[in-house]
Image (cartoon, rainbow, N blue to C red):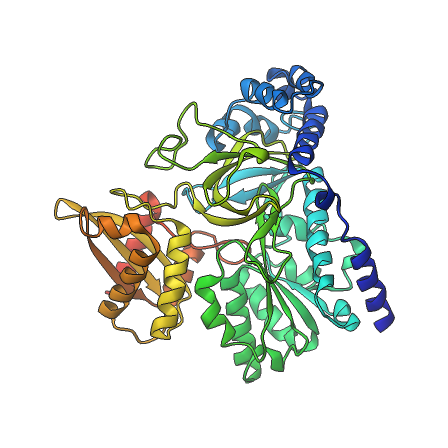
Length: 515
């Protein structure tokens, strides 16, 4: 069977010369938008927004005219706006609403920002694009010094249930469950945990089944959200009474993670290993596969420019967004050739799933404009700025990672909220750790690192942000809250900033659990 590994590795190396490496980002994106508009020009959405007229802008030699036509005819859409006007009709079974044909799948996503679930269309074209980008990331590992036999090891993908709910018109479920249910036949030899376990709707049952099967698998790659992978590995170690996961899976070399920053989890995660892993980050949202890390020497991810998505970038500042993270009418939008390194941008997506100029809520930053490499810095509604402290999710993740290192503790989850305090403001942190810790010391260290990382925060700590409270909370309470909200396993993650109804339910659970 080693012969198969050699063939795979050789094929991977030949396929690394991708179109994206040899074409300008603007040309790639211009072509992508053209293809999207041509495909959807006869849909209800395309006719209403004059897609045929927009396409005339591509004929002009001016590289910017096509975008002016597009912006002039298609407004920026929030979920509420596009769902009410368009997607709701598609869910009634009407075809050709925002994309040709009927939409058979909808990914349920709360985006960690709102209390109710969102229904994001997932078309056959989008599934093909996600599959293609997944293969591209898999191909990228051929550049590393891995023996041919490694490419025959199992790939464990821990996601949502593939047993999707059907309501008579469409299937709905977690995006990972939708895409996993579409695994191509050639991949099934490598794929774990297999169709039967993947279909289990109950997360705890699925977890138990994977633990029982773990000893019989030869896993080389693990894919999933850090929190759930860590729970799985902890249970495997406990079940088989071994020192670390490499006693069970000696060939495990790569962890492909996404959904949340891995930084806060890393210290605790590495205690479960017998040898170092290679970490590769993915940016797979319910709206599409946006970027992936293809270089171990960089923490950045490469934006995928030629696979069914057209990107626009909204500078994330007070001129374009209000204090609640809502986009302001007339906000400035930019295309790929207009972005700058080191600035925060909210993402707009137009995709082959029928999203058009859609604000997904994520905020990114370019670390390398020429190589179109990005990092995720937060969400439009997960920046905490009660009084001008402008605390980003990236600040939070880095400060929590540094705090865990300094105090030598494991921090598995955390969240923060803002509250009034003595006529001004305070932050209240809930830190998920099972380590013994002095809360005052935890506060002092965390507060100190946040001041180092964010000058605005430092200024406001001597002004309007009068106090910081830190509560250590057992990790199980975080998981219990997620279970209560139907967000256990799969791509689900705990929101880093709690507001409104979610904050109320969290406070109620905390009071019940700790007092």
